[in-house]
Image (tube, rainbow, N blue to C red; front, side, top):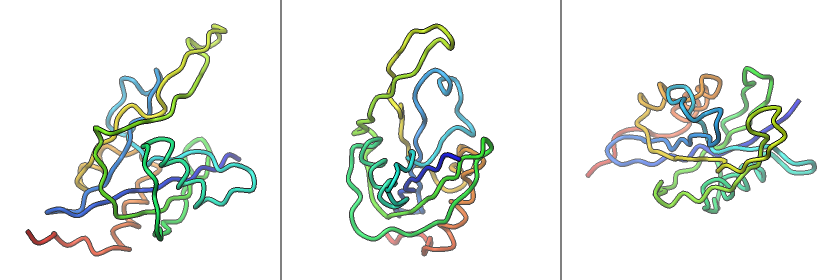
Length: 156
């Protein structure tokens, strides 16, 4: 069964905010609610989930994640894929998104290969908004983050 790993970035301003990404490509083009995810990707052979999570954030967002990560455990997505997640407090400007490109056969069964950005958008969400926008199978990561960190309002 495929295994992926990713990082849930969060920041504290007045409220706790969570960074989610929107997958690129034609399958996700017209999907919004329930489509946003953590930046993640496949764990390569002989790679730890944490190393894969750090690599995927670099590939999908164009930033390096250094320092300790908060382990958020794993979930099984609807298709069976296991996703391991970690969290880190870090700011990121979504305007600076520099996602890698992926190549897929599109349209399906056409024999034509087309390149798309793996991630076409990144956005900060308040927790309540994130819960509406996020892929349902990844919602437990938000609960686990809230249990792991102090999410009281940040003093101005």
